[in-house]
Length: 566
Image (cartoon, rainbow, N blue to C red; front, side, top):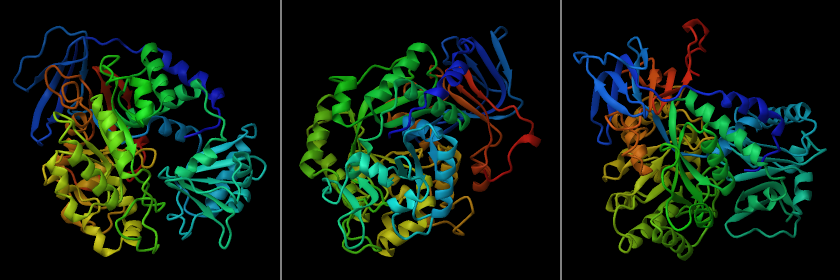
């Protein structure tokens, strides 16, 4: 993701981070309603956590257990619920940070509302040579088509504007951005990409899909290293406020990795990042011939690579076996062919890197599963092949997840956000394999849940609520959308904790609360295994701890809290 330079914002933000946090110390967090959960959904209850001075759990205490007499630091949780630190198994750290610092259109409900927001943002930042941002969604706007460069010109015509769609798989450019990028009617569609054209013409209409986005992104001035640092700091802040202590960064670039290393060297990288390189070239550039070690007290490593196989459903780039129901003749876009897919996967597997394949459409999922079947014969051992999203799978292909224990890295809130669109895109016949969490888990394949932030908010409790109810924040549809695919509460919580750690080879370090593990936990105001789905969604994060250090505190009195239904 490209962004206008943000350097003026950097100094105050990093100055706040420079304030030294208390060093890890022998700590007792007592009077808790505590629970940990393993990958099988088994729950361990406790009332206190004794943490050693290395930030690891020394002992989980029961009510009858004698408390240590001398500790450096003590906290009375006053009966609050404590769960393991939550793990988002698929997000984009830098994109999330940049999205929070640039133009955000994710809450706009119409084209006119978006144009007003763009116009206001440009007026607020008159010195920015480019206006960049993300979050537009023609489906939410009820537009029935992609927006055009002319419609973006109507908001800002005096400088280039480039805005990513909510899923990140399309870019919307104004006329000056097209001119800066040198895109004309003679510009051909690249392999794996599509330029939206004006009706009856070859002239670019203003939207670029999947691989075609590079045609305009190349013209945007790249962020400075300091901009990356600011984005990382902002992303970390937002994640801690949601109770997320660890995340799989899907698509780490060399610039993003270097920012993470600077944060670790300077001591302000507090969250845990399981980095997956943005392709095999980035993998080799960053990590070399094999996975990196865990760095900074288990806060950063690169052991995997992300490979894009198709696009997204919203931009009709997801690769389907049959044409889109609402766009006959279009089956989406395979971004790479079968031979290249296997070559890329082999290149990674030779170095013992974990392979994570982005596959959304049923054709893409079938191809990814077939490739895994073939490569698993050669690359044996604990490989933990991953498919990212696995949104639409032909029922006949679901069993293939279980054959090699392929991890289904899925985002529950996508189902509630996409439901109406998915019905239109897929038609009734293909819905039984859409967002099929329970069916995939029934094969023995592990589930790991995440958000795909900034596509969705990195809110694990919204994800848990969706996973157990198949309903959105409005409670619709009544009884849940295809409710047979809902998962149990324990399975949903495990997919955001222990299973998330397992999915990133971190299960011996974090993901559960037990002796020897990193003391990552969240203090919340309710038990997600007991309350109704709508109450799960409104869970309040009171404290977030990483490695025995409190990194987030919400001590507002109840009267100052926002209303339920955030």
